[in-house]
Amino acid sequence: MTDTRIAELLDEWTPSYDDRVGDWERVAAEARLERIRGLRATPLRLGAVAAAIAAAAALLLAWAFNNQHVSLVDRALAAVGDGPVLHAVLRGEWGGTLVDLTGDRRPIYGDNEVWFDTRSGLTHQIERLGGAVQGEELYKPKKPAAELAALGREYKQALESGTARVTGSDTIGGEPVVWITIHSELLPDVADGKGHEWAQQVAVSKRTYKPVALRETRDRKPGPETLQHVLNLQLIARDEADFTTSRPSREGTAFEEDRDAIPLEQAASPLGGQTPLWLGRDYNGLPLAQVYRETTSAGHQQRARLTGAKAQAAIKCSQQRENGGNCFRQVGVGSVEVRPDGVFITRGPIQWSEEQSSVVLFYGTIGDDSSTYHKDQIPLYDKPYIILTESTQASPFRRFVGTYVPPEGSVFLTAGNRTGVLHRGEIHITVEAANQAEVLAAARALMPMPLP
Image (tube, rainbow, N blue to C red; front, top):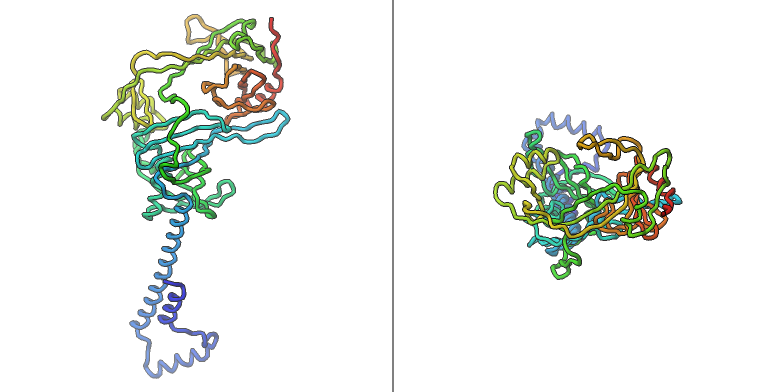
């Protein structure tokens, strides 16, 4: 129905008083004449007119709503396509800040690129920090991740079926958006014994109709660290997707880290003879209290798939934000791993096959370890300290940054601002301190250690 036809109906069903606007004396006179003649407007006639007005207004509103809904669906679907494979680049809350030692700053983002086949569930994910690949996986889960199901299946279905509901307006990165709830359900929480509404929401740009973010909510409150920015999203054909991987999966890999105290004279040994960097024998009142050789090992352990009631119970335990450990113990499963492709328990010894070494310089206070019989000396982290960890490899074993290498002359500050990562010559260095200012000050003060 067109706007013109709706206007015509309103004209037909309602009288026009355009020629009497402001002529109140004539209106009053005609009213008196009607009473004299005994002619009164009947309730039936007035009711019919009111009903006609209401019907026309409802018709107009329904027509406008339906057109708006069709426009939203058409434009939103046109913005992402209609293929069976989701290709998306999501940016989460992880990452950090790159600080030039002269003071300039710029953000470094952590991104996750994914191809997700909405029919088979096959998933290819690549995780990057500052463009450096941190991990890559190709797998077929029993149940897709919530954000992939939301963008690849539920978003489109909710728009087409009309089950999507607008939750509110917002601004994300300067872009006006509408939050749309595309899926919600009532989930029990073992912690309080109550049901809570969990929902998956997508933020759609009011300007482009494209998804720009997604998040999870609990009882209508955004969940911590669940916001992800949508940098790119398309539903593409199967032959346009990338379901190949260029590196072996580390799924199921076990890691172990050991530290052994060594003399200062051996500090270059873990670095293959390269000269370590240090802050001198003391720094800002903090003595060089201990030097360690840190060894990180990776290995694999035999895994068996867990099914049935225990597997379902383990999945529920893994979904708890609190008391997860107690939940697993109550279920009666020991070393269990809940992965996208199922639930697994580990068996047998770990076969260690990879090993990397670092040197650790601890500036601060050491004291007795009350948990050991011999009262071993350990760093006291409740007192001021600076920790330097140095290696010759930018490997996926490195904490906080993996294979990301900041350009020389700058420091990468991780999200907590208590850890900085930098690169000098052949040495990769991690600086840990109480706050950002101390991290940057220590990074600027680094100098080559004199070797014996």
